[in-house]
Image (cartoon, rainbow, N blue to C red):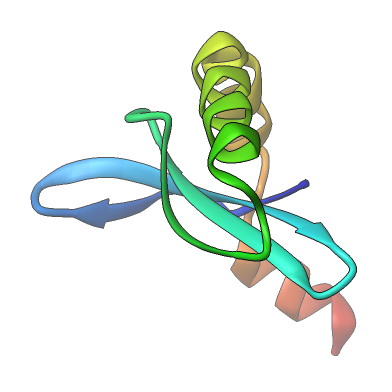
Length: 77
């Protein structure tokens, strides 16, 4: 599972969560907890991923607060 930092979409603070399994992927948005892009996962698996996102929304979003892409980029220089 990979999580992004926060970004604004339609005036709302959002974050993207990605799941990968070999060549399969699924991407969803929080706080909505919905998968909006996927390839290779079954419908049942996508439902389970959405349930996971909603059940763990707060914890995942707390982790996202700690992501600072500019600081990470500067540390790599």
